[in-house]
Image (cartoon, rainbow, N blue to C red):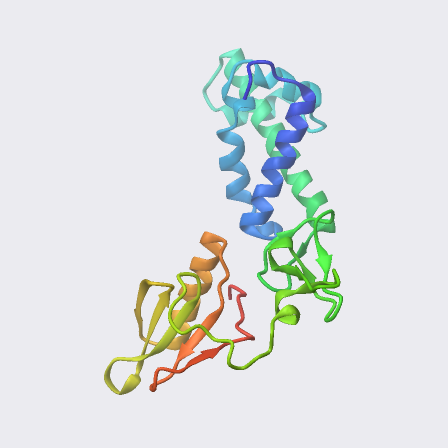
Length: 234
């Protein structure tokens, strides 16, 4: 961040932090707390000397009770340190308020579950699901579709070998009691149950923000596309 701090930049920073938190933690406010604290504590408006005065000017949540601030500061009596603590308290509440404001109009993509904000989500013109840009496509006429509705339903349209993008799972171990999982050419491991494999795949997909096609490899090596794979973290 530049040395010149402004109230406009501060408000933009608060909104950017709030969007990052919603995209990472989802729309449930119970999941925001620790992440808000971490992001605000490390922000330049708190740790740089020029920041707190701008926070005081821009924030609607500047604490007016110095005793409350001193209680948060502990034994610190230095004015500048207390000022930084007040700025931290104000910015945390500003970010929390902005998260709530954005969450009211945000949605989760019906395909990949990514949080999408009111100004960027679209609806598939066939199934009417709300989808993000990554899950949207267009047909030759310009009609907006989700990738499921826009797919060629040719049953022979299957890859001959791993593409480097899709996920694959198959029965493994003695009597096929376990499940092996791969993402492209990356072997992810052998799991005790299919459910365990899918939990890991959903977690990895959320972490890497990649939601590939999922294929089952049969005992005979046939690839079967799992069109209705559920990406919801449970």
